[in-house]
Length: 138
Image (tube, rainbow, N blue to C red):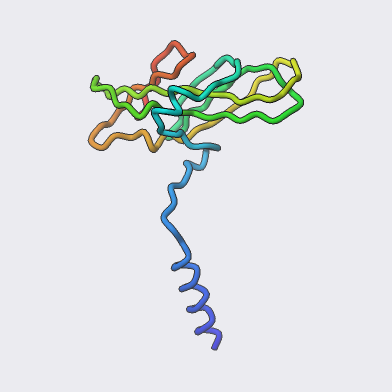
């Protein structure tokens, strides 16, 4: 009876699993690939202080005014692959900040870039709006 219960629970667990895209363990959010959102999503002011790549994650340190409300950060890809070598992807960070406070804050963000991978390409050049250096994603 115990064995039957173990088999039953295991089968239910296995069948209940769906193949959802998973974030890299170091990443908090996932990049959004959407041309319309890339072009049209408004953003409150911020500055990018640091941008680095670690495995599949883009790690950003940003500065913005706020401190007493919530913020919503999104990383949006244009959906276009420019035919250079390496292939180039254009991304932009957006901030929705309905926070009336004026403290100047720093925040660390991380985004999973794995959806940007291109089959057959080892490297992708990432052009991040507001950051003057190219990032090479391997």
